[in-house]
Amino acid sequence: MTRATFGLALAVAAAAVVLSASHAAPQQATFSARVEAVRVDALVLDGKRVVRGLGTADFQVRDNGVPQDVELVSFEQVPLLVVLVLDASDSVVGERLAQLRAAGLAALDGLIVGDQAALLTFNQSVALVSGRTIDVPSLRRALYWTRPGGGTALYDAIHAGIVVGHCDDARTLVLVFTDGSDTSSFLTKEAVLDTARRGDAVVYSAIEGRRTRFLEELATTTGGSVASVGSTKDLPGLFTRILGEFRQRYLIGYTPKGVAKSGWHRIEVSAKGRSYTVKARSGYQVGR
Picture 1 (tube, helix red, strand yellow):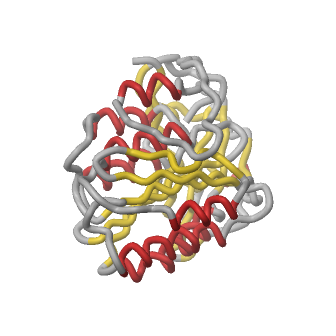
Picture 2 (cartoon, helix red, strand yellow):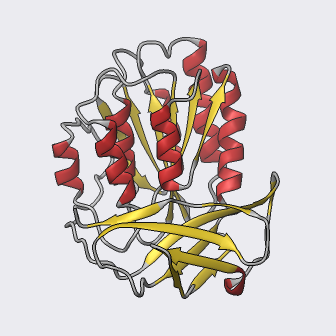
C-alpha cells in the first residue's frame, strides 16, 4: 500500500514456507514503516460497465476521514506483475490439472511487453516455481512440471504470493486458484490479512465451490474480488477476464496529510458527483 518495503526472507521464514525456486529469487529487502506515498488501485463501475476517461479532479480520497490531494491518476497500461498462486493439492489431477494449466497459460497469453509474472504452486507446502521474470516461455514450461499431491496450505501460499509480488515499479495482481479450504498452513488467516494490509497487491481469487469468508475478506482488504466456478474448465476464460479488468483500473496516488503516521488507515475512494461504484482496498497498515 505504501512505499514501505517488505522483508521477503523474514516473512517467508516466519511463515515456515518452503520455497523452491527454479529461477533467481527476488532480492531481499528491509522492512520499513515509513509512509512516503500511498498508491491505490481502483476499479470504477457504472453498473457492470467499466468507466474510463476519469481524471484527477474526478476522484475524492479520504484517509481516516481526512480529504487528501490526489496527485496521480493513471489509466495507461502501467506494467503489471501477475503472480499466479495455483492449488496443486491431491484433488487437482487428470483433466482438472490440464484445465488449471490452460488457465495459467491464458493469463500468460494476456501479458504484454513490459509485464512480468511469477508462479507459485501449493499443496501442504508452497513452492516458488518461478520468481518475478519477463521470461514467459520459461513460465509456460514450468506450468507443465506441476505435479499435484498432498494437502492445502492456502494461507501460506497467498501470503507468499503477496510478498513475492511486492514492488514499486509495477502494479501487482495476485491471481489465486483453490478448490478447497485451508488444511495445512502454518500461518493464520489473520496473519495473511495483516500482510495484505501492508502491501500494494490486489488479490483476485477463483474458487471451485463455495466462496469462503477468508477470501471475501481478502478481496475487501485489497480491492480485488472472488469468483466461484462450477468447474476448472471455466478457469481459462475467467483468468482472461480478470486480467482484462485489472488493466482498466485507475492508479491513484497521494501523500497522506493530516493523519497519524502509524496504525490502521481507512481509505474511502469515490467519484465526485457520480453514483459510480468504486472498488478499492479498504485501507493500509503502518507499523504495528
